[in-house]
Image 1 (cartoon, one colour):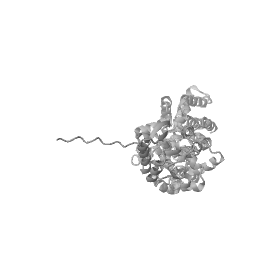
Image 2: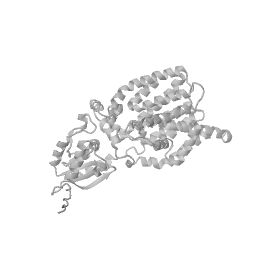
Image 3: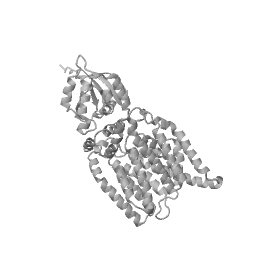
Image 4: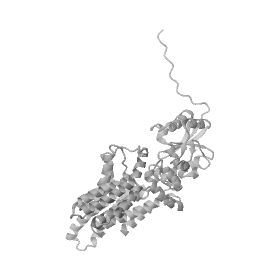
Length: 494
């Protein structure tokens, strides 16, 4: 367990300070610094599914608010997960297979990506892997309450971790478990589901937050498989072949879970169920099932163990050479994927870079200048990097984010916003580029009022673009812009 954990820790700390947060991390950062009552107030409106994570993050950010501190819990969680994967492999196969599985998890680009995200997904993966280890122990000798407690807590970090119950039910069926095991699992599962009901009720009322999701396709499933086994062709096909070999012995002795019987449902069931459900109501994003990644290195290591056993009997009478060969193979995999890992530590690998946007604002916007955020969620950059906006006027803001119990604050109604904009001759827009270019329609009357006034009454003068965010100065022309007039009517026949 120690070696994979140390490798994961080293890779997680490498390049942890990217010099900027992206929008989801920025939400974690600004909410995690609020007081507990204000976090509680927010959760009544949005982000209830992340509530426990924000509360856990608060004491961490209280020590030293910054992007490194924000990401450290994820690094620690990924480190723990790598060790737990190794423990599962050692328990289900043998210690050297555990070593290989843990190392494979540690060098997986997907694991490394979320180890450096200031979000809850790495913590969910750690909780799910710990629950799986407790599940294996409970099937063999009990008790079941630690399994239920850990999985219940994990589901409160993210409710889709509840799909792990279905994976474990399939594992019980493959193990041909007896009535005692089914009763124990059923009691634990019932406790987890009952404890999760309040979260489900509240989060259903906040489902508009995921309205941007799209229906997954076969390509979505293929991309996830590649992320699980290796994004490069060489690593992917080798790992896929070993995983197929690892499926031998899917069903073992009665009442005894096998490595394949635990790992295969873990890899397949949560993503498959969520993708199927998303055909009716889109809910799927690959990070929601990050915890399923833990099963992939177990399958690959189990296949490698079978291959190594066959080869050793013929060519390697000394068993010490076999674990070393596996470690060297993982090292080659790491070297092959090193460019991807290095690229992932570039701020440009995320959807946006609010740190870069704030630096652009600090260079161009002067104290006293009015600023308009289009849409309101673009205010995230000012909440995360307030120094760049010190002294500026947020022309649309009515109530601050923390005080109003919202993510981005409350803005003026359309009529009031138009009056405010009518009193200024220049305004800086920090905006989504798609909205300004018309490639995306503004949502809601306030956002439509913003784009309408900017387009009709102002002229854009230069801009700075960082990812999908535009920082542009709008100036009211001396001669008012006229709306396009219809062509004069043609004279009729005399």
